[in-house]
Length: 168
Image (tube, rainbow, N blue to C red; front, side):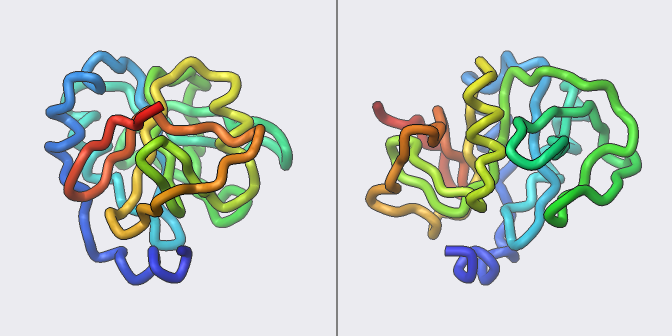
């Protein structure tokens, strides 16, 4: 799936699909990610959200086997290198998001997801009440993603062509 995702990186997220979804419009703080390893680029969405006055944040890896924290961030603000090739705000207030955009390696319609395998998002989402929105290319969908006891499912999936409300 990682090799497949790297071949799809020239496709863009349809920002209006996200912005027009009424279930996402009440979020005051939206946490996303800085794209890496072929992840769907959400930076244009961040620009639109910032322009609309929505507070955005990026994840910070604090320590191995620990939940992520989120620091406020606006397009153009300085980022610094984090562990595992991540980028996070050099400065920024620690915030608790209402909605978390999660990069996916694979997904299914029930909200099952595969990430990189470090468990950072699973540990983080377990502690948050935020709306969970996975972000992936359409081609990353599988019929069923195996979910373990600690795996955290998505509430929604956003792809370049559609918004999927995950089924229970």
